[in-house]
Length: 446
Image (cartoon, rainbow, N blue to C red; front, top):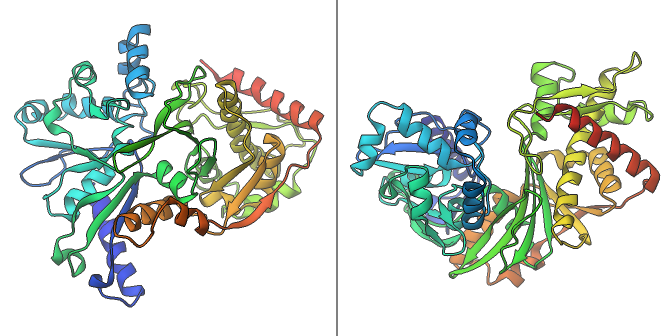
């Protein structure tokens, strides 16, 4: 946590310097963060009692298995829209309280604070004056009731979490606090907070029900706006809060893939098949078009719609002709196959096929990948001019509060398409490729 804080502070200071402005020229700050990553710190000192447990961490998988009953699973889904899985914060928080000496006793006495990254950064930016989060981050803890918009006493009891540890929950665009003058050189209002995927949906201006975006970073997250209705998935997708403005909640349905860009990192850093992520595009173009290699990147289990924490990765369909290009291509294709898994689940839950999928994140610069995605989904794919839309969403939320942006309509006019990809693949090929993927996944499920 200290490293996260120091990096954030240094980057803010560098940004002010590079922009050649003064801190008091800044109207507001917005925060976008990894949503489920969990930190516990001392209320008196702000000192973390343990390292942040990141969203991908699976240490609580056995705890989830032991706790799981159909009744508990139903209770959790009805109240939170989520599944009982190590991915979410509650089991990580429970683990810290049970495994750090004296933590549970301190928590019961009100001496400890819990927060996701946004809450921890807000605490530090305000020198401990504010212990808050927004509704989108609260909705990812397994402790927040997305219907009542309150921390839920049944869930707190289930996971043995004292409510006094938890932050107060605000709208996504709200007065969260003011930075301490000594940090950045002036007091700056913090007026926007949203979890990274919700921030990306907001940055993509997906404000109408049925609009959909997919973010390709470390993982991949497909999210569709469902308006003022909670859609409870029958296909193991998540119901969540898209954003909350002026007390009004907009909901979304989401599918989470744990490994997207992380597969390219693995190719580069662990098995050294590429030295740079940008090489993957040329290698995929060079690969044998008839290759039937499939890479299932279940390095940390499989997310939606499988939710198998014990699944492990595999490369299938290798022949003596398979080389680096074919394996790299298979890693990129896996991102698209997994997106299609999510899209099929959404449509099985009653969603209409979208007119277009808005994409963002580091991987979308790869034209080959975006074209294959459009081909496989049989849907147009729109890449915006600004692809770092989680950041943009945080800016929009902060700017709305201080009047820089007038309304959601104003924001909608700011969205610009940089490239429009349209499907070009024959139907028979699309079906055959996806069928091969489904068979490959069956081989790794436990």
